[in-house]
Length: 242
Length: 242
Ligand SMILES: [Zn+2]
Ligand SMILES: [Zn+2]
Image 1 (cartoon, each protein chain N blue to C red):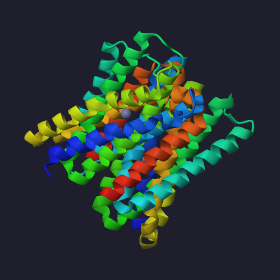
Image 2: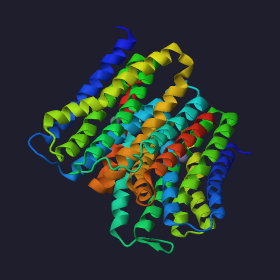
Image 3: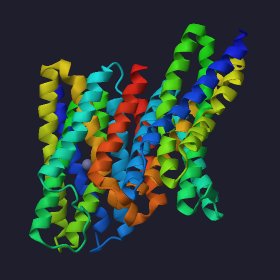
Image 4: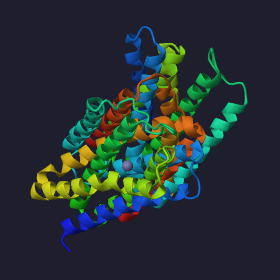
């Protein structure tokens, strides 16, 4: 199978898997706030692990990768500032204003785009690493949709709609992954830069979107345990993949 | 000079270099709550970068052993945190949560120096030339680690000189461990990935448990995102080009 098709299928699977995130909400309108904190920390730890894996690809030029990383970091900061979402709390329960819904959806879309760059770049490194990254992102998407679904359920959105919205916010992941794959395989010289870019974007997203609220939701110790364990798990698997 | 003396001497130089990390704080006069938060964010990034470097290094010797070591490191900090948290802790003039964080960072960084000392000692097996390079690399690598320690101690009112002193103290295990590691290089080699993983796990957990929540308390998250992921990138680049 052509690697571009694999990229398409793998990132589509990652986006679709995110629907599983609504499962904790089956049969209940609200989940305890602690769960939301843990879901954020789980998603955050995995994302940090992926950033580490992308930043540690052997044989890539160190300086372009570092410059790419700094650009990725600043790009995330810039998109948040440009959309006025730099202080937006993403986990507000019971907030029913339509404007709030749009802003959360906007943030999620930008977030999923960054993950698409990660998958696309990893696919150009080699197939096992690409599939590994797509699989990590797929699992990472699940707790993210749990959080999103919890916010939506508190706005009396149905479970099915919440699942669909979850998948929909992850669709940009698919397009961006395929586009990134196409660009990097056409211009292999850009790989170090793009890997760096993805590393910076993912690391900064964890810090600004996933972690800040989790500490208040579930307490320092349990968040630190969940986030580090998730990171360690990804690091272990990456050691396996090579 | 006798080879063993040389190993110890090189180790000592690397320890003294750590004290240089306190120097920037000689130029910061007044430290507000926000500066303290940002200093913690900086320390978090430097420690994440250092532990990612260690994880990559450990994985070359064996990924499962490294991750096993990392989990023990996590557990170690968790227990130390519990243990310190129970009594009335003080660190110099400081008591309470600030003192606990100060004790923990000195403890974690000191413990991580043990495995780095082993690395220095083991490197001497590769010849004096290589050992000299590695000594320089570790000495330079220690400067930002001293900066990380000072960034936590200084905002609590520790003097610049005492910050330098604690930084050097945290690196003393390097010369102490380098000599036995040099003598027992064959015996010690299989234990290396466990030790490296232990150091990385302890540092990552410390970041999630104490440094990031402290940072989020008093500074806007976009700034923490840039500072932490930015200093992480610079630290990683630093380690890769050395
Ligand atoms: Zn995500
Ligand atoms: Zn170190």
